[in-house]
Image (cartoon, rainbow, N blue to C red):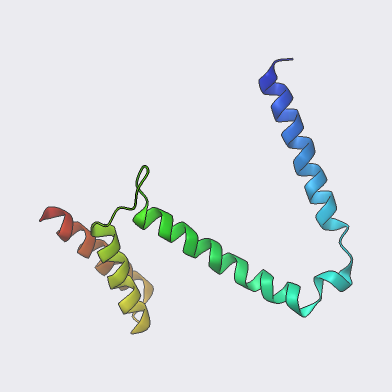
Amino acid sequence: MTATWVGIALMAAGCFAFKLAGLSVPDRVLEHHVTEHAAHLIPVALLGALIAVQVLGGDHELVVDARLAGLLVAAVLLMLRVPFLPMVIAAAATAALLRLL
């Protein structure tokens, strides 16, 4: 058995143990208001972090380019309650036009 397969087996066992630990948490912990509030905020935080990394991330530095302008256009249109598809098209068009300049 190579080191790769040992690593795969250890990761599979760790994932199973992590899943089993999550299933064994008592209901009183899961139904606590702080836990429920945190569970509602975690996806928002992860999505925000993903957007920040994709828009501003370079190899080892922050990059400010057309992607940031597209994000700003999308944010303004979101605040104006523009439907999703026109918002995405406007943001993509903004980034594309700025890349042409």
